[in-house]
Image 1 (cartoon, helix red, strand yellow):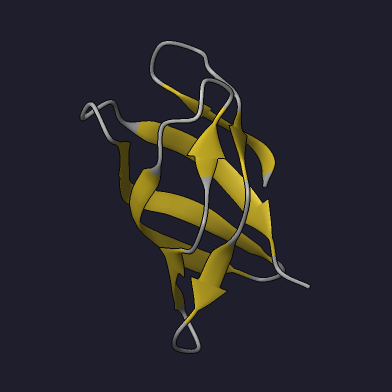
Image 2 (image 1 turned 90 degrees about the vertical axis):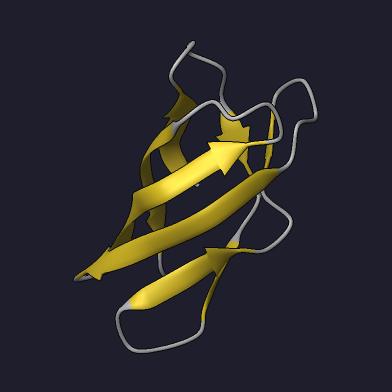
Amino acid sequence: MDGAYTESGKAVYGEFYMYSENYGEADGAYTEDNEYIYGECYRYGNYCEMDGAYTDSGEAVYGECYIY
C-alpha cells in the first residue's frame, strides 16, 4: 500500500492481487486496527487506485497501492 487510508483516517496495509491487466482485488489488506479490506483497485501505470474498496465495518478506503 502507498498512502491508502479509510474515510476516518486509519492507515491501510497489505496487498492487492492483480487478477487482470487493469484490476486488482484485496488480498490480505487490513487497517491499523486489524479490520480486513475488501474490494478492488484500478490500475494507473505503476499504481492501482482504490475502486470501491471497504472495511469489515463498511468504511470506504481511498488511496493507492504500488504495483511491483
